Length: 174
Image (tube, rainbow, N blue to C red; front, side, top):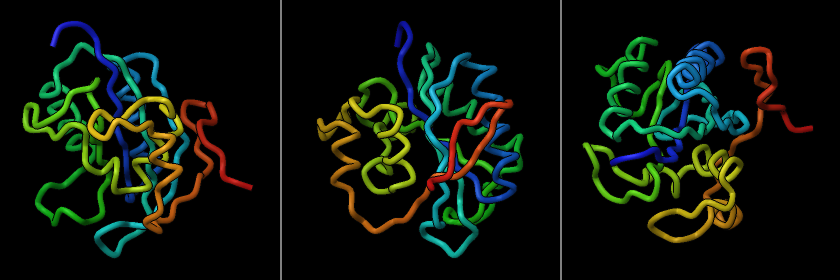
């Protein structure tokens, strides 16, 4: 794909969470420059019994292809201790996923676009709605704000204090 495209990326960690989320943000900033960063949320582990996760969504603009991004993210995860020899639903140091790549739909370079988790998991939809409320889901055609307003699976998440590079990017409620 020629030119630059807007990409939304989810970041999650439930092992040494602040360290690995910060490492991911550092790497993304080094690669893409200015980042659009959602608040950071803590959420219960989904699909397994485990420590709570920190989750957020980052928006970037890039000319990299979906495949190039996917390879960069897998390497970043590996560089930060992500293990691939464990069950899919298990604790992890770092998890980065491409949520959307412009308005692309379907399997592209082995990546499902848009990512199905957007419509299933509060820890993906809420931060995406925070930073791109008017953006429209490329399949269902609804804004992320409207999707979040109608979301009601009972998954719990709450904003947490998070400081990155001396800047408060998130604040706990209350």
